[in-house]
Image (cartoon, rainbow over all chains, first blue to last red):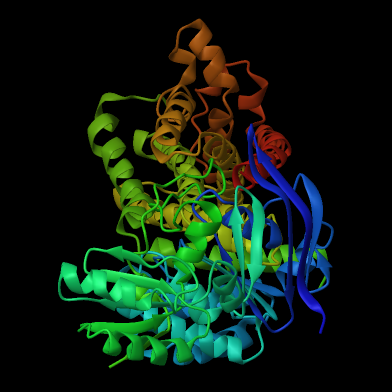
Length: 344
Length: 268
């Protein structure tokens, strides 16, 4: 399988600030790479270079076999871009926006019009097709923006924080749409601050910090790398917490930690460990409220790799300012974010 | 497709989009349709009674001035349109598409030229209502309209350059007013420039707005034979040639300048 996106030694400076520092990246054809990183890590700069909007100071990159600098114009016909700030025209209707984009891809007026209708139907926007975008909700605008990036059926798609600022329902709906696209064989580079999003959509994840890729792999590989599974339980009182810690100690692959009514024990044998843990707790006569085997969340992966969480406050100048060293805030959304195998 | 047909086609698409936006925007419709009506009425019924031009009715004399002044102010539409686009995400979409880089400027100036045609038509109708008449032939009258449109097209590129250098609607609004006001009024648009004191008179006689106004007057048969006798300025005695030269010079300077400023503005 060949690579749809290859970047070698990409470097970009804005004044004294190095936004990208010899970044290397490959995305095999037909796969989804999730580019994770805090604000200022260089995600948006990477996308802007790969989509020909910004020239790198050093290094080279090809997308769909075309050089991002030398073949910029030809490349633009082969990629689609959908961003955090919906690049749509508020005064135009949904249909007019898509028709305009089609005409600027040189599909011709008639083909542009039929393509616009196809996409409006696919994105469930037929009812709103002839209304100006002013009256659209945030989720609808993102859908039109995403539809705009698909007008020319590009083999490579760039999604720059596609769901930032959306409510959970609109986000879930957009994820379904993207997952659907990906199953059609499109190569996607997705930047996101939401670990859940990368977990849900990406085949592989690259973690970016200070303009460099500091780790790549599948989400599972990254989770294994920072320390595998663990048993988590909630105990009814201080005595029970202490008893549970003692009971789990022989099973744990590292120190057992307690945090209030919460007990965490790192384990090595996955689901088997859970069965054994239940046996040990039962034998020790410890009553517990809730026991589960948990994988680390990508949030935790991120925290352990970079020393800060990914969901720092949104910053429109991503890529142009030094990374924010947000104080470590253990994953608030981690519980939802991960695949959990709860014992009942 | 050749580069030229691509550029024209893409410019046409952007112009189509701009016209849709204009149609849906009440402020812009006001600027294109209502302002011209207001100016005709203002000069015909308010100032007109106080100004006397020997040898011709003032309502006939002032119409060429109203035409020129309105299309000159109308050219600032181009600047507004561009700064507003620059502030929106749509410009990133345009840049990411395989379209001609000139399309945004070509499309914008083209759609504003069409808005200028609408303005001129509205003003002509209003002028006929208040007593303006064309005393030449239809071909001459058409030539007059053409001179006016060429001039507003060239001014559009001047405004584009200004707007792309300012990049903020408020700053551009002030700058364009400060540029257009003296050009539109220190001229023979509404009074005889020969009545002005020395330096102002010199400025007025060589002002491109005066050349275009005089050209329009000559073409419509509204020129007063008494007026140009007081002036020795070449531009007022050969107003059509002078207007064409001014238009060509403005285009030659400001098309490349605007293009450069556009590239600079979008590649930040």
